[in-house]
Length: 81
Image (tube, rainbow, N blue to C red; front, side, top):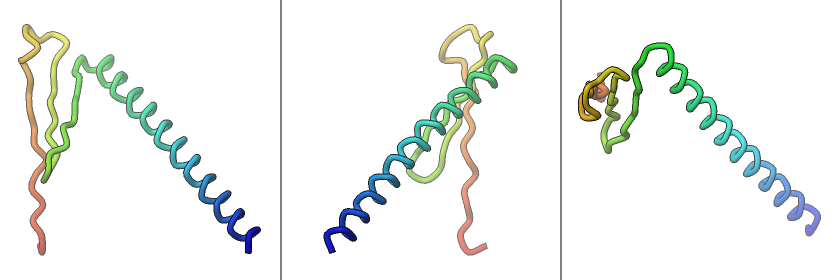
């Protein structure tokens, strides 16, 4: 019983470590992708997660002001269609 409990805890810890590593790797890959898009296109893209749907802010490296942005909103999902 103690062996089973210790083994279950070990498996749970391994799963938590794997989850943490996957999150870190994903964060690194997303950062690299965003930097690549910026270097290749000159556009910086930020995603803002709102309650119902995400928004995307696009800024050009050539913009005159920081506030010069294009903003897009993810289309609404019609439920039941």
